[in-house]
Length: 361
Image 1 (cartoon, rainbow, N blue to C red):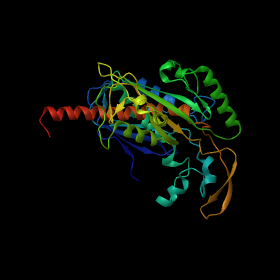
Image 2: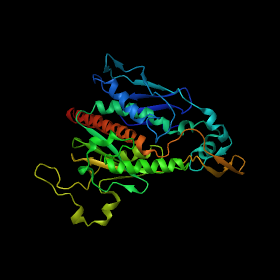
Image 3: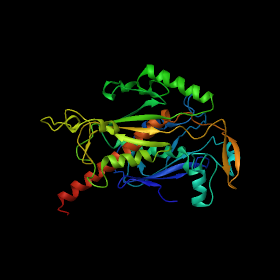
């Protein structure tokens, strides 16, 4: 299986399955001499872990990260950082009924067709539990980007949508409720909807919005490695993601160019920011903001029809512990993937400046 590595200079390779002994990663390219706060790393894992509230999966995992290399006396050494998060609360028996059947909108069928076999216990490698490794690496990336801030939040659950722009929201309230919506009144409505859907044995989708501030000018490359293209790749690699838009996004098509153009201030900043902080694929110093759409979780705790490996129609019903809506736990994952992209381009810009200073062509 290929495709387990993300990044160019700041490179994360992950391994492990949802119901295996654990999941882990190897992070390459992190410069030496960066002080790491282990509590901050664990704090990000705690934001992602299951069982943290009544509206998420009740699987109980401590999600404690163990580091095996690349860190000495609290500082990065410049060598690969190896880490592991052990699985401690697997209930693989919850998936035995899926051994010969394919869940609709899951990877079951395509995995078996591609590889000739599959790990049916929680989806194996296709499980969203793989994102635990991304959160560890993203937390390290954040600590090597001083001053750059990442704030993701839930802006929509089903038809409940925040209409206010992020500038008018108090983002300090994101962690004040289990939905991670910075509008307390809307958060209450969203939580009520998720509880209702869960009681029905159903699921619902939503949107996570993200704002990156204090980004230096010049990150990104103007052709295939545009900054927004890499952000899009990062977000679309997250389980259950169905869409990505940045800046004015799809709403921008309703505007005329005279309305949409971001006029300059004398200092190079712009009066508006429909570009979403990126022009020509390169950061312009303004806030980068984007939205990520997540589909309803495919596992339903209600009866449905599907097919088995013999092509026969069979009845199934989901068992076990599942999220009725992924977006509350997706917030730290979105931030982590954004941080990985920004760290990678930050190091690439350093290399470009070094090459230019040494006369390379």
